[in-house]
Image: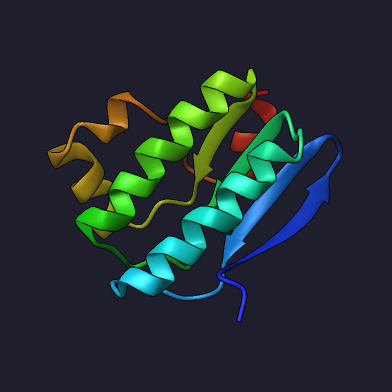
Length: 113
């Protein structure tokens, strides 16, 4: 089963996650690979809809950091929207909130481009 689903909103590719928690190494690997494929396909504007994600392990966070680096290398732009309070806390503790552009909801994320 795919870990992400894609939709288009103008020239922005919106990524939704298919499960609330990423704990299992296999799931994390697959989720990361699917996200990397989006970047590698030449998409320039990627928006991650985090509304369904309730927990990310440290390995999953590592995949997000790798994704960020890949996006920068590709000259693309990445935004996160609708981050749950739990994930927001994790991002604040790990200081990832300074690495990622995080917006409260889909419209504000789209408008940020």
